[in-house]
Image 1: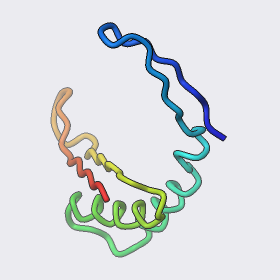
Image 2: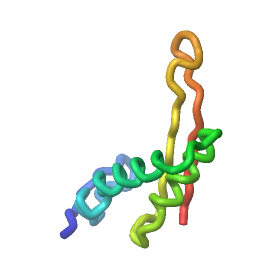
Image 3: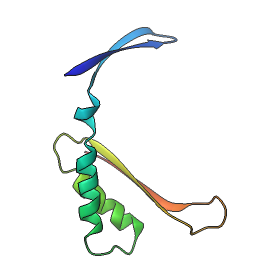
Image 4: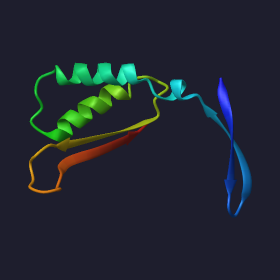
Length: 91
């Protein structure tokens, strides 16, 4: 089942889009299982390796069109700085 969404755009007026239910878009149980399975594999030396392993598994279902993985190391830099990587793949 999908929902019809009515959007108002300032220049173009009304547009109508059919969007799927969120339950059809994102399966949190699958994502948690992928994360658990991936973390139980051999330890990755690089964050990029871990991100790519996650993407390999996340993108397996035919219905998945794209995914982004963002990994941040905690407490590496002083202050508010962060160190990490972000990788996106589109089928």
